Image 1 (cartoon, helix red, strand yellow):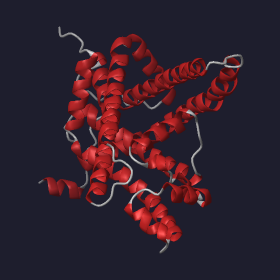
Image 2 (cartoon, one colour):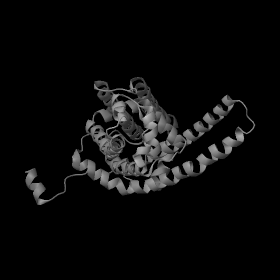
Image 3 (spheres, one colour):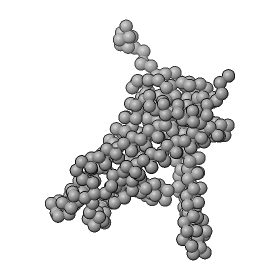
Length: 338
């Protein structure tokens, strides 16, 4: 009787499954680029209209003009308000992280595009997890059949997720950082102590977010692998699996977090700096896109490694309850098969 694989083995197997399906990586990268393109083009129009043929245009073309960027941001609307020095290189990562943990609202147009992006991911999630669970090529028809088949189930799961994350960001976050933090530092005069108190609250909030994230990840895995139709049933089953295999499940999650951290560290070292022009500008663009690809690979490895662990503990590699989607039986299909 074989022993159950460790978290490291499950993570390695998940990374292998991602590597064996490069089409998914390319597809989600193209999706990310296409969703971002309208915002980029809209910002370009705003910049062109503001610069015109002024002397500031020549200065901006030669490097970063912070005074002009501040002037532009003061009068900008919509996506233009995001054009700040913090969008350059690794500063953009830190800015997004700060916005996330502090629940800072983004412009409506950015929020709308992000919501559309999340809905598309929600549609693709079923096909992606199904492909990694089967660990073999399913073809375009099989992939999108699985995506469509699980979409409504994942929409119901997304409603549960929205309630949980809404409570975390809408109720718990204000209580921690607006009320509790204020009470904790009321009589504190040492800035370092106040900083440590806030970092502790960030840690508590982050752990709760991670707990919700890992539960919903395994809920998606169980919904696909076991062909579950109930969103609440999948969540309960996910909690039961994590509780029964806590060391391995949390170990896999921790390894994925470490992989994400290493990706951030590499990008921090290689990220383009302000003022790059000419060839170096395109090199910086290429580095930025490489970072996006690596970040997407980490996201996909989350699902693949969790799927691998679940199958190895409660089933076997490649096990999926639902039959593989096949080309619909029809006279035309039968004729082509012959």
